[in-house]
Image (cartoon, rainbow, N blue to C red; front, side, top):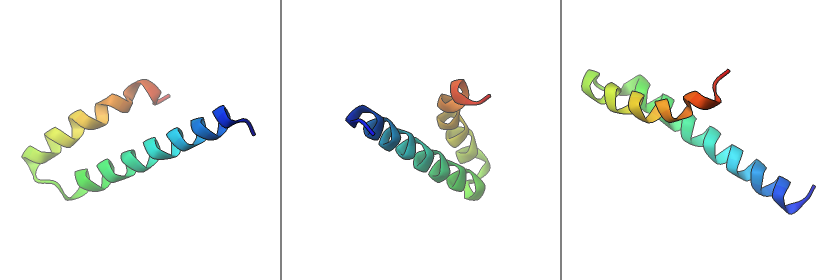
Length: 49
């Protein structure tokens, strides 16, 4: 594995972890806070198939 592959894998894992945290926050958020979390989740929409 090249250094760029390793860095790309790390970046991907960081994004996955961030997405998992946002989903956990969404599950326990109040109605108003869900709107804020949903807006943060929208940044991942270009990556969803």
